[in-house]
Length: 81
Image (cartoon, rainbow, N blue to C red):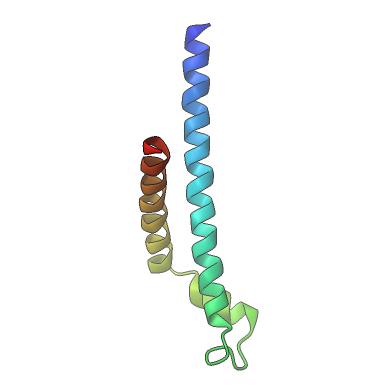
């Protein structure tokens, strides 16, 4: 019984971490997409062009690194408060 509880707690912690990281990545990409359609940049751009422009390996690496940093910061704050 004790082992099941510990395994469930680890799974819950891992699932929460994955959800938070994915959410931060989503916010990053939505911010990039909004930036593609600002008044100065978005004249005549299509959605396909904007998506092709923002989904690059470099942007994905930046999103993941930022997401993990954000997760660590928020977990640290959550434990201290």
